[in-house]
Length: 516
Image 1: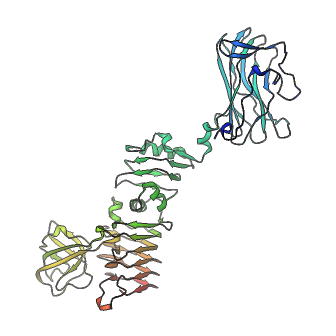
Image 2: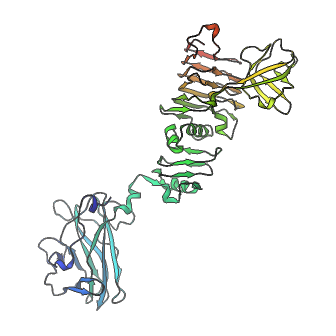
């Protein structure tokens, strides 16, 4: 902001060459004495340093020089008064910028500092710059802090110290330097002011942390650019993103003052990455018990492996909530079911284990098992590649000996299957639009009190909610709507399953389930 530019205001007084009749030897008020025809003042048209200037002899203890024009004082506007002087002869004196504060009724406003810092002249012929800043606000660097009462000022200088000296004074400059205070005036700090580069390569972690430390309650601005963060970064102050960040998968961005999905989307510039990084923070003791999606719809082109997104833990048992949003599945090869066919041996003596499993490394935990003697909703709970075994969630029947099994790993919009144990996670007011391309939710392998409430799973390709282990213990399914992708088929022709439960104390109530 510069009022001289935006509003066309003129702050600088006229040159001395225009006449000394607008330069007062008192406070600058109308009717007061001027330096026109004064015995101790003269205009010098051709000084070697100043060209035209005022030569003034100091005859009083405080010799005043004030411009009689009214320089406006505006709220939020800061003016710097600058003048160059040099001692010519006689006693060396002190020089300071000075002013007179006037209100709207042309009365003097008392009780204000009306002088700037004093400068002592120490040699003859040396050009010395004297300046001071005046403004309405109490800010560091403002010499005359006038508040809101004055509406104008008469500015000039004071000569103090011994009398009898002669001084030459160049033309005054009064300029709007509000821009120098904008950073303090604004409610934000910019990471680039603290050394951030934003080239996507240089590690800007230290700059981010320095900006956050300096913000002190103000907002931190991540200005345009791509910022690489090599390690965890936690913001204790609100953040606004114009640029984006990139960081290793295992590193967290913690936004403690605006922990919500839209802010993470702004931070990473990608919806899918944003929900993963936000969940990573949610499941790492970030001072937040819930992640608000703020009604946003996230377009998913691939399953969200929640444990892989979190990266640093596979056990979590503190209450956490994901709420108020929608996931929309975008068709693509990432949703194709992984199918593995393998021979394996089953013995009733070890009813939940397949042994001598060929191709065991390609079988994924959470896969549906199909084969002779295999019941409904039998899933792979664990795979031991070294031993060549597969652990099941249910025993088989009539499947003794060796045979061929098919293992189908469905793709889920939200897949918690990578967690060894996870308890007390909740989905609240979340809609999964599976669009016949994806399944809904895979539960963790172990855990208690997983809750899905007031939510919707629409048109899942294969499964709505799957428990491949015992993560369904004490599950709560309450107030939801489940809509099949097989609405037009007869019951005996449908293959989709809304929910399977392997353990006890499930609470399933007040749900609407359509044609699974």
